[in-house]
Image (cartoon, rainbow, N blue to C red; front, side):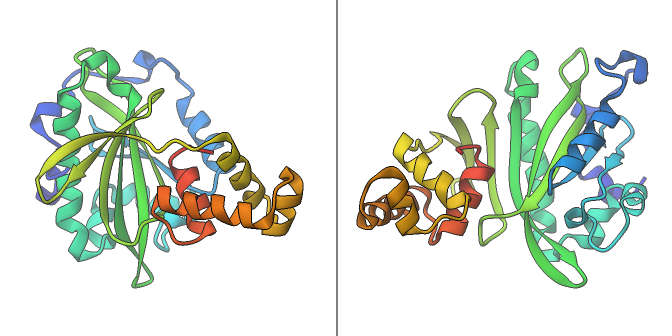
Amino acid sequence: MSENINRFFFSENTVKEDLNEETMALNNYLEVTDAFSRAIYMSVYIIDYQKRNFEYVSENPLFLCGNTAEEVKKMGYEFYFRYVQKSDADLLSKVNRLGYEFYEKIPAEERKYYTLSYDIHLLNKDKAILVNQKLTPLFLTEEGKIWKAMGVVSLSTNTNSGNITISRQGTNDYWWYDAEEEKWRNEEKIKLSERELEVLRYYAQGYTINKIAEKIFVSPDTIKFHRRKLFEKMQVSNISEALAFVTSNKLL
């Protein structure tokens, strides 16, 4: 196996058991994953940490970089060395190490509730596209080691690579990696008022400022005020970025 690929897998997380499909909680999980991928625009893949390869790659084109799903699946982690922008190659290796070290500090029974998120540039026909990748455990060994994980790829709402965060299901807590201080920082997700959520829902449906104002019985200037406050909270510059932000962060 390529020495490059070994950079993504750590001896501390080596899955040594003789694992097979019969030990899985859901034997048809690949069919479920395939159905899930057909219902969303994002790309989906599954990593098998025992076999150190891709077990599943969806046909959604964003992650494929001009290849077929089967071609990417056969490439395995060599895919990243071909299609991740060179300036992000070290970042990708760092993300894997940071994610592993973070998970090691979490109680084994809680690890499946955490999701790692980061942005990298993928090369599609020699054009660099900034994408967001989210990784979450699917199956753990009895010792709590990650056996299989699902990755979901979408267009990033950010402008630069990095942006490494970890969130926990069912809470407002998230951790972001401070690259300058080289440490994780814990914060809470931003909270939106019911009125702000209402305005965003109408924007998502394509309503104009005047139409939204009519719908919720306020003046257009009030809608502009809410929109400005939303932009400040999310640190975005337009409504398209705001909608992408709330979708990515499950706020809407």
